[in-house]
Image 1 (cartoon, rainbow, N blue to C red):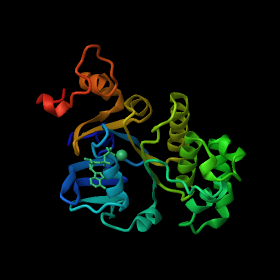
Image 2 (image 1 turned 180 degrees about the vertical axis):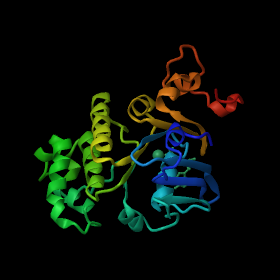
Image 3 (image 1 turned 90 degrees about the horizontal axis):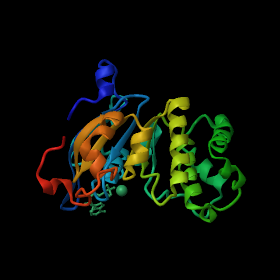
Length: 268
Ligand SMILES: Nc1ncnc2c1ncn2[C@@H]1O[C@H](COP(=O)(O)OP(=O)(O)O)[C@@H](O)[C@H]1O
Ligand SMILES: [Mg+2]
């Protein structure tokens, strides 16, 4: 894998997350084909990929929701591959799953409290709920409503808020933009940038929405067919012709929609 810009800048610092050569199958189907990348502490990293590229599987493998057959995952230097999801959460990683998965019949407030179940410092829970309401004021207004009555955007905010309630050092987000209007996507990524900058939470966001992810994250990887095919700063990725063409849709008359691997050319 190419060395990321952040690794070059701080060669001595141990990454908060190190994924090495992982392979994950669903029955006979190999979904992740030897993926390696590191996330430096405090970074905002994105993995871009089309539907079916393997983005969710990478996050599920890190959090113990899918078992890997090969490779290793280390968080803060400790091996976490094939551990129970519960253990991984307690260690300091929290996942905002694809499709939000809030508890539909529980109120907004109870959903947030559920996110805090792994914590011992229960005296800080009220302060952190207040912080979530500060990030997402519409959740405060809806605090007593059942989660299922919220809009898609509010449910995404609640899923992020709930993940924050475990007081994680790293958050993994699976397509937070899915099904939301551009305005809401913008709002959510602005808050993610604040969570990263103000709380120092390391973020790994997987997205099909390349334009917002490239604008907000600082390091990016491009995933195709279960393999990482490009890694760089998001600034550099945005300048690459292939990224413009296939992920940003900027090239008029291009072969957008044709799978890149079918064209049998190397990435430039
Ligand atoms: N539960 C499953 N059973 C069988 N195959 C699956 C399952 N989940 C995902 N896959 C396959 O694994 C590959 C990667 O899927 P996924 O990680 O969900 O991609 P993404 O999140 O990028 O859309 C796809 O080819 C998908 O069809
Ligand atoms: Mg997915």
